[in-house]
Length: 261
Length: 187
Image: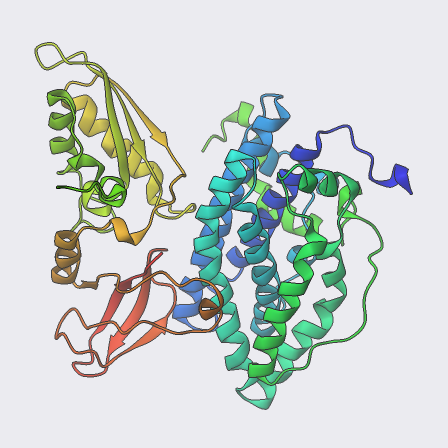
């Protein structure tokens, strides 16, 4: 199995890229809610969530590019990579489906991101600790927003409860991947740079249980196994479609032809 | 005897001792307004963290300066514009060589908005941040702070949405005077 996760790139680059791609891809999913939100307030909330995540992605991908040291920029990493070069978790690339599903996903991911960032505030890597302290404030709001909506939908009508429950049920198979910890991540964690994702599961479960209980929802059972690994560039079919939209402008009008922001 | 409290220095960098050239620039920056919340200057917001003049101006020109600015939110779309208008103000004051650095640490907090600035916000119609930023377990569930209506002062208000027209604000409504209003969130 050792051969599976071999990569020429530095472990820190791979790790930061994973953090940045999670934020970029989920940010794009929230962009997709624009003009389609259940009401005006939530439409605006969606763009705020998207902005926070895009801001985080820009900083993280900028740092990843710096660590890589090949002269690439955050924009190069966001717009000029194909799906197999992305390192985000499968959970964030899943389609929005309906509001209930989007909220279920956001709760699961925000709880995860919250604990990950909280641990990273103590990173020995200066950028990561400074970034985490900043982003943690934003994610605190994301966590609260999605927890409140999970409760509102769970305690709402039969239909709203059914939809948000379906979100948790359908997405549950992507949960184990969040806590999968490859060797290089363990190594970075031992150096005090990263946090081993496997160590986040306890606090994640505790938070989730608390919200689900208040919402009157049932925690799904069972574990899933994905058909591949993000570390090898494997993704569900949805990432390619997402990137088609995200990268459209850059691909239609490459920089040499004048597409500069 | 005076004891030094580190926090005050942290909160209001423009009140630290500085050269006359730097003081001149701080004065200019106090007139640079936030594009999204034009009631507040960039100093009122507390986003300018440091001003370092490397080369003083001669006859009001040819100066060189570095200005540290911290974003309110990582994704705030006004950040680029704010950096541009700060640069423009500095250049037009004679600091021909102006560099604006974006600094992340310490992370911006609404605690850096001064008392006068909070009053300016209220008069402008935005409820100023109140209480502490949500943190820890308590922040998992909505314990919304009591926010006074900036119009009538009533505390009978309710949150409409956690997110408003900009990342830094939430939407509220006053159940006394029935006016909707924005609340500057604590972070």
